[in-house]
Length: 331
Image (tube, rainbow, N blue to C red):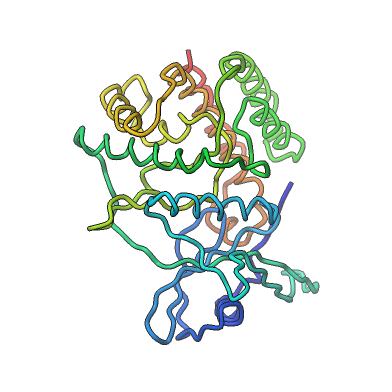
């Protein structure tokens, strides 16, 4: 399991990496943004230009996979979709490397390599859809993203499928992160549920999608429209993956919102309405995915401080209850 750490990444290292790689002079201020997996910092040049430096968690993605994230963003930009496009250095590279030497908590020497990228800062306000017209706009945004997504494949990115979820369950069990008193129940519940809905994905069309298209990753910029951010979870999946995350509740309780999302989507692309049956299975798999990436960063100093009870018996009892409730929603 990947256990990349960020304890060697200091504000001074961030400033040095950006200045050296992009021939910039920064004013020294480093503002950390909340980020679950990576480390993201706001920096400012001496001329007042605001930029965002994104340092990727070591070991989570290969270099090829990270470049596929950048290519997807660039494809969206070429399709006139508002996105924050990674900035290239003098050689045309958008993905750079920073090596930092330091000591572990035990006093041992260690060297860590961080892949990072620089983006223009593009803020905006949260877009909370309420009216039919606003839900329609969201659907159209997703379709435009999928138009760009269909231009090429992402062979180094995860494929969101029942087989992938099964691999994640196996990883969690093999790593021993599931509490011993909960292990048998967790394994049986995940196994039986995935087996029950697995055939529903047979014959479904897959393509490159955003992967984490919830409303927190959509901002509204006056004069520009809706800005789509954070392509970190780019994956290959059924297009409905980027639809259901926008819904405020389970699909059966959001018929109006889902209808308007799909009407907006179909202004640009046809949509296979049969795949709405995959929404609740996809939600089940997302819980497993979420547990897996938490497990992969459990050794991180910041993560341990923020989630001291992660992995405890009480934690796993709650997670199993959530999985069981979601299994019931699948029907």
